[in-house]
Amino acid sequence: MKTLMLSVCCGAALVTGSALAADPAYPTRPIRIIVPQSPGASTDLTARLMAQGLNEAFKQPVIVDNRPGSSGIAGAEMVARSAPDGYTLMVIASSFSINPALGRKLPYDSIRDFTTVSQLTKFPNMLAASPSAPIKSLQDVIAQAKAKPGQLSYASAGVATGTHMTMALLQYMTGIDLLHVPYKGGGPAMTATMGGQTPLVIGTSVGVLPHVRSGKLRGIAITSARRSAVAPDIPTFAESGVPGYEHEPWNGMFGPARLSKPVLAKVNAEVVRVLHSPDVKKVFERDGADIVGSTPEQFSAVIKSEIAKWSKVAKAAGIKAE
Image (cartoon, rainbow, N blue to C red; front, side):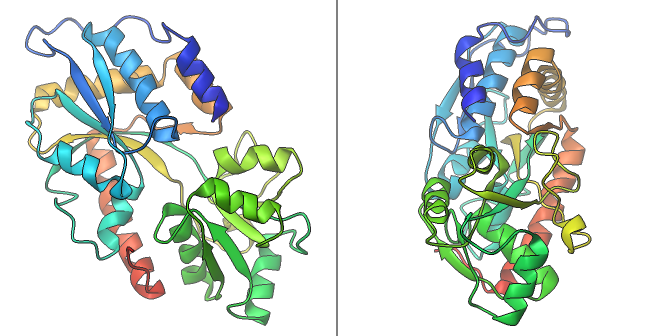
């Protein structure tokens, strides 16, 4: 994600002026975007691109407010409790749709207490192997797991994280039994696999791909429905023997429930325009992320579908939040 960070820092004018006529009713004061992750995370960098573009469009300061912790729950609760006036928004990762599937007692209802604004981007996870491991394809993974159930291990960013759920979905669809080795973050998980402590690691394509290019990891497969333009030689899970497999983590924007339709329409229109501006598109595409820019209704359907999917996977795998 280094290129994305550099682009955010260097570009003071990534986006040109607004295509919408000025609306004196909104906004008339600064807008805050809550990000339930630490500065530097991909979601944070996405939010900063959005903030920069909306600042240009609305002629008002758009401030990113990082509120990390509790798998994004604390930051999301702040937004759920905010006034539905358009001055508090949120950019959050797809953990938002995993949390309600894990048996957590959330301080909000993930559907009722939020207004979906737009799905912003999506990007695949990538399964990779240690160069010392005798694994060159997903078929090898499945064959070894079937031959020795519960013995082939993989590293992830932690229990009940998106990467853990990615592999739980693979096991759910294939019936194999893998040994999960959770680490405290994607970085330590990749370091362990590069050092040969685990034969496999699952992580975001943005995080894994640089190590594949350097030869420190061997790319096995990606979770999207189609191959990535930045890694066209790495096959998908679906074409590697798991037909129908598709999972692409995302970043999306929300507001509190009952956000007025005129404000929602204006924010959505500007967000979609920012996403498709040439300089912003270049940043995301260079890092392997696909721009979405959905309608609120389309994004709402994604959230409901994902909560249902992850609930089934978590129940089948016995995964619960720690």
